[in-house]
Image (cartoon, rainbow, N blue to C red):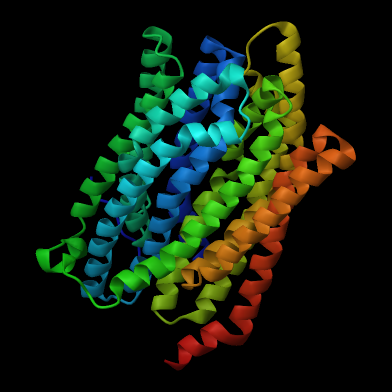
Length: 453
């Protein structure tokens, strides 16, 4: 069960990044599998209204879960840098204090999310015919927030030290568990959307337990009582890295809520079609997420080791790999996307045809511009690996402005199809800022300062 940590300061950058990212891709495939099964079971067994109910809460969940995901991702930057520099005492203290901060954050997010769920659904003008199901789904998923936050923390720490195998095993196991529980709770016991939410929460908690046991097997990470003792400036360093990533996620999430507000105004059939494609969004970006984690770890370790030339080569190689991957996935969506979308939709022939038409139009547009999203992940992750979370945070603001601008104005100019371009606009605004910032820092300032130390 013990995870294999990987030193990314030696060897072929492209090979290391692919070897690190590949298990994460497999894990993401299984994660998307159980997300898709979740949606298929709900859409086929409960119906199109239940499918719309899940879609109406997607951005709310992204916003809430993005807090713990963002904070722990920030923590992992310092962990990766200490690991690359072979500073074992500092590494253990960083991990121990990350645990404490994650626990505090999980409790706070749990209380705020439960208190604000109903009011937020009202504010978004969630259609009344799906309001009840949306609220139940949120309530149950949010019960699992402590377990989800723990998974984010433990898996981030493993990845920071080059272990992508243990998160893979955890995710595959959780995916299988989620599928079984979905079928049991929804199809067999008729628990409805609450059953689908419970299956997700239980599976994520299991994956957290597995990752924690894997961390305990890593020799350099055998934590002692003194590792949890207050260390001067450490909390500030961790929060300083994590808070901008949280803000980035929150601002992106708020922009997504504006999009959801606009979508809700078109009725539950449009919401259902929009939801069906959003369930494939994870499939579209799953390789990008994996490359992102690999690049953060690669750049973080090499920055800790003081090797700027190696960072440049690795990021350049990653950009090429990312572009080819995006083109391949897009081609797959052009050829088979409509058949996949049909698996999520049931109802009368008229409703099904209308929902499928909306869903495929949105999917086609996203697939055309997918390469922009992949470049976004490459350059954002490279900056984070360098310890710069401020510019990625600013990129979140760029996404926010572009997404809201497109969502509010394009439908006025070209009709409801304009809402489909909100994501593309957000990707483009962020990617341009991130790429320009990365190349400026690489050429002029950041690495020159680090080599002088």
